[in-house]
Image (cartoon, rainbow, N blue to C red; front, top):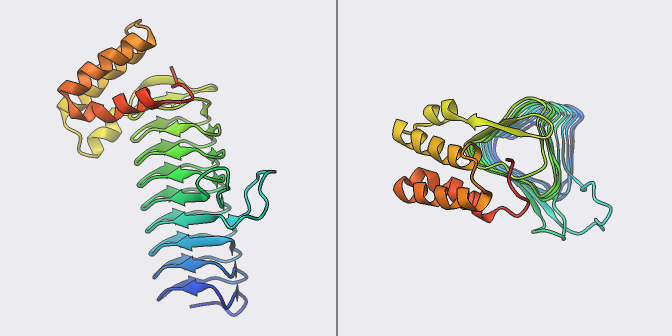
Length: 256
């Protein structure tokens, strides 16, 4: 399962049925779970742990040092979950000691070509990153979020669950759950109602999220007044609670 031209350090830990393609290099501190397939010309280095049933395509750079001048070869980590598809030319960096020391990617993510996850990013489950979507350092992305091609996310920004970014979006502030944005800088364009339907949200829940969206973005209320109105809606419909909690906890301010 390991091509004879691949270089796998004796200290690396590879699970059952792991396949490694031609000219791939796997470093000393790497762990790879069962049934994961690593294509040709991939470099996996650093203190990197990869789960099971992943597919990593050719020319990816996984676990390299972060692009951070403050980094001084600390033993920081990269952790990738299970059943992720990582297409060509992606680059994921380890974390830094300025944060939790780990870059983390969850399960069942669909990550297209040329995607970059910088140091200390946390990506949830079931996300989609189209070609050339890029996360700066310390970005957190919630479950089921979709980032269109050439989306760029500023450092420390949070991207809420079930949100949607159109192609070429530039996110400079936090994106609340369920909200659809596009543009440079990003502007809101409603909620991701189609995505919510596909994931089993009821018509009632979608209507409640729409009411919360209108209170925040279309009512003409001040931000504090809009937050108060969203809190009232969340008390009536629990599906609005993540939206309410997200906008209340935002440190960078929200897209508005």
